[in-house]
Length: 264
Image (cartoon, rainbow, N blue to C red):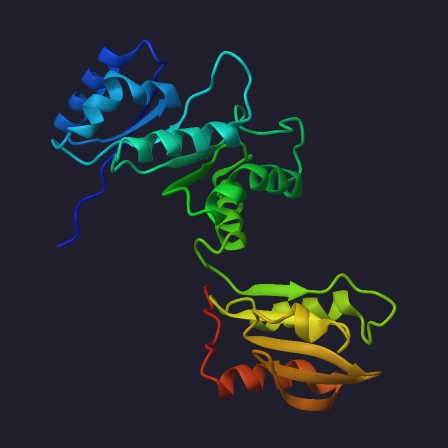
């Protein structure tokens, strides 16, 4: 039997709020809620840290960055928070929040700008194994927030939720139209969760740059494509007009294909 979802109650605390913090955690857990708290790293050196070290009345509260009066780099603050948690041997999950207090350029409104801005904070933390929960709170709607969060997790390899595409930036050696070909491949394969596909313009640098990909589509000669499985070239000199479908066939042969879900 699955447990019923529980509401998360969130509140921020300053270093001088230790008694309020302890009362808040106790009351919310007694009421059956999950507790999430924004704290300053230094607060874990005192009464709050003592309380959490011995707390066993419920799940440990999520800990996240609490804005400080003096502006500090939020990336540094999160690292200081993790250091304080580890020094205390606390079993407390870390919640990475992307909002107006943690953005580096909050005036940028484009999706791509928000994604880049959020990645400056969340990317280094996630790649270092820091973070048990993440939220993006600056997007215009819930769908945009969720898309930003999933993109961050995918880029850091913390959670794979879609196909991963790797492409070279294009140069004078590129042997086909990289942008249109990549789009064609995406249209055929973007439902393959957990599969990484590399699209490389030539065989000079392509095989090295796509070393971590599951499958590779590489320009071998003008109008001809080579296909790879991992680092191994398995098919050569495929006419470009047939190469995308041959790539799909190759994915099927290796058991990584499934038909897209058609939702009407």
